[in-house]
Image (cartoon, rainbow, N blue to C red; front, side, top):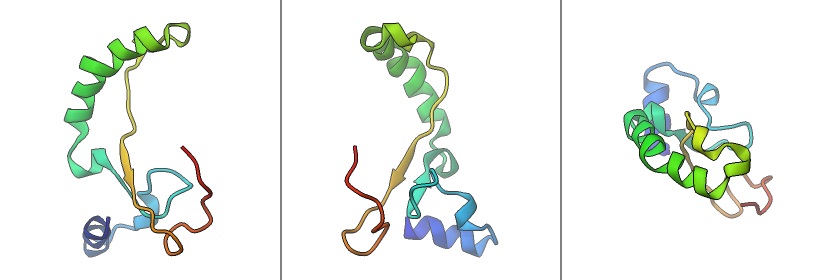
Length: 86
């Protein structure tokens, strides 16, 4: 995450505009790191099939997008306002 944030700063990009969601201050959106094609393939090849079996009542076979990200947590230091969640 630090390398990614340094890249944004060096390129005059506001890191706060590129957060995975409003809850996390220390995260990376995978599409912005070049993983978009991989996640598209993963969605089409695997997630749709799993979704159709696990969530047929929610049209799990209709998955057509993704929002992949990685978030960094550090107890007592980063995003300390976030409570335990899954």
